[in-house]
Image (cartoon, rainbow, N blue to C red; front, side, top):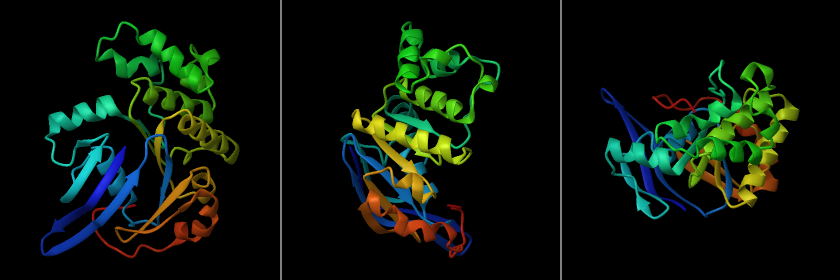
Length: 244
């Protein structure tokens, strides 16, 4: 599903050069749930941007579902993002005066999809919120708002769900619910890449990939996530454009 071959991302400012990613190789199978962890400056944000086709690598090859996306132009990358990738962020990014159902429908409005209401209801049902379809965001808990955001990411039936710190604004109980939801989505065949600094959340994944200084320094089973808890407190050891 996902294959990174010798991916590097280099930022240059004047005479300085920062290798945010340095010859990274990674393969993720369809339906796999993988957590990516690392301290600030490790390359997590850069990897997320490349995986999400928000940025292009300086060198190397990125295959997504068999398509080499590493050298596509901006228009083609936009199509890939719209059709193959569902994004979930720390901030829920819901329209405040719009129902949960209408928020989930939003990605389908641009495509003028006449089945958008049916598809949005199905996505809300998939995250366990069909009974909250007509509630406004301020009538939902933080965990419920994040589930609406996940439903919105799923409604286009993407190849990959890319979740960037999805529990960062949630308490421990809601965080655990979101983690279990990601597990269920993976078990149902969704490919999920989770960017997180929380070892407890990463532990829900079958694999934890650890980054440091732009390189992969570990690729282990999810039940060893506790071994990486110290990474979250590691000091910044690199300057440059990439902040995590």
